[in-house]
Image (cartoon, rainbow, N blue to C red; front, side):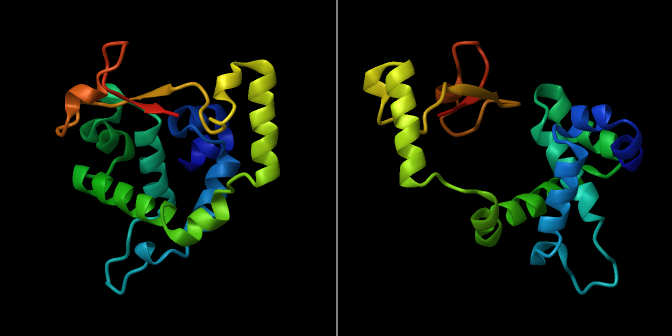
Length: 162
């Protein structure tokens, strides 16, 4: 991880889908979250490794995102891959992190986006300021609950981001 981060940032970005500087900033922001602290004599794995595992999983799909593949890539056991992902998601989805990392647009920014849509696209879409293009995020497998509703026009299971 460190070798690629410093010597081959292109490989680092290919694996984790973020720049090394973005990765370092995420580590810094997440490191104080309680999910990464414990009172056990057996310390947790480094936050850098937990974040790398999670980013690798999110940056791949199909067989490359499978638990076994991620475990082989990271050198950690499959259960540890699941635990690391859960910890990172807990920290990222925490209220404190979301308040500092996610900035929703103010009324002025929303109006500017609506105006742009009206000027450059279909006028009827003006009030759909958050909808961009329905990007498909592929899923590894058919979801258990209501799986058929995730089947897309490209014959894959995916989420439609709007």
